[in-house]
Amino acid sequence: MQLTISIRHGHLSEASQAKIRSKVEKLDRYFERLTAIEVVVDLEDSEQPKIDVNVSAEHKHDFVAHERGDTLWAALDAAVQKIEQQLRRYKEKVQERHRNSDARRAEAPVDVDE
Image (cartoon, rainbow, N blue to C red; front, side):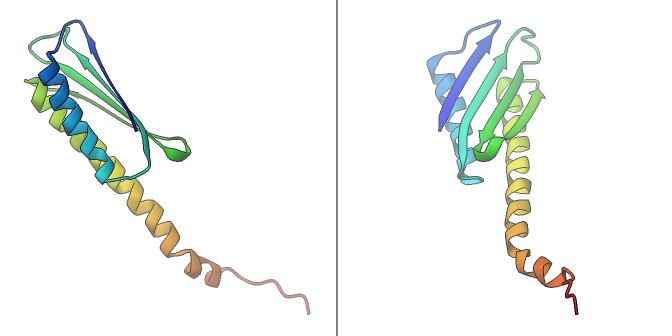
């Protein structure tokens, strides 16, 4: 999995970037097929930093969260929580589709020409 952290209008220390990296890397617990994660930290408004998290998964599925908060860490936690929720919902949808595939086949009418 490729992880990119970008900072706009400011600078973050290596320790802060490592903390962001550790929080975001936990997303692969919710969905194993993540290919890339991009975190953009916008420090233009120092009172309310903005965080954008873009997650790409196999088969061209993208998950996006934008969050603004009173602190950088509050915004990061909220954005990661949004992504977790999206990943959980998507995974449940995929699993449900696979679980009910036999039921859908049984419900399909069969055309038999007599």
